[in-house]
Amino acid sequence: MTPRHTWADYSIHALLMLIAIVTILPFYNVFITSFADPAEVVKQQLYLIPTSFTLNSYELLLNGSYVGRALFNSLVVTAAGTFVNMLVTTCGAYALSKKAMPGRKAMMAGIVFTMLFSGGLIPFYLTIKNLHLINSYGAMIFPVAVSTFFLIVMINQFNTIPPSLEESAKIDGANDIYVLFRIVMPISKPTLAAITLFYAVARWNEWYNAMLFVTDPKMHPMQLFLRNMLADVTRMARDDMGANMMAQMSQRYPDGLKMASVVVTMLPIMLVYPFLQKYFSAGVTLGAVKE
Image (cartoon, rainbow, N blue to C red):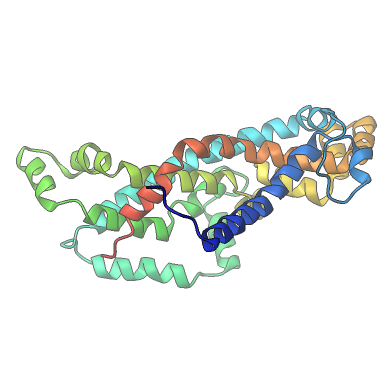
């Protein structure tokens, strides 16, 4: 028997559709503006119906060596940063999940303390400077090597694994490293996949530490490039291309160039997300049980 829908069901569906439209509309506007002729965009504040098509904005954006270098920097920071994040988070969570570990409570208290308080921006900068990480990839990777929230989620996930499973492996001669990488981690794949994706998105969107510690434009990631372009698209084009013609084109296509930068920046994550979306709810839910 087919269930009957009430007016409340239709109202909820209509509300959800309205929220979906409001959420998608800015992305749609950004996408079509990046391909539009600037004269068409100027005619109306919100460009919704495409009446022209041009690739001039993408040609101007991708012809610059600065853009290619920024994309490369973002890829390096994302790949290396995510690897460091997962290595530190997994190993740290496995050690802290052992209730018999000496000093465990004091360490957990210190970790939770960092969620509420920080040392401040000036000590942070001086620490990075004393470690000789200025103008290096390390300045964008090591200061955010671990997230306290994801560390606690991973600890709770490891606590759900029966201790008898690890004890059986150790009776057979396995050490802690073998147990972690060959037994515990395969069982925790959903949580690992979810946290890996969260870390990868955070590293791809990295710009704040780069703004603080990276003064060399050749080391800037894509997000910092986008921020600078949105702040002054004409200056970025002139500094990068070194040609008056390019500077004039950037003045002719200011909105299109900005929107093309947004599309190029968010496209990699948008392509990866649908394949890993199922791990978000499953992975975080499995590791969200209170200890």
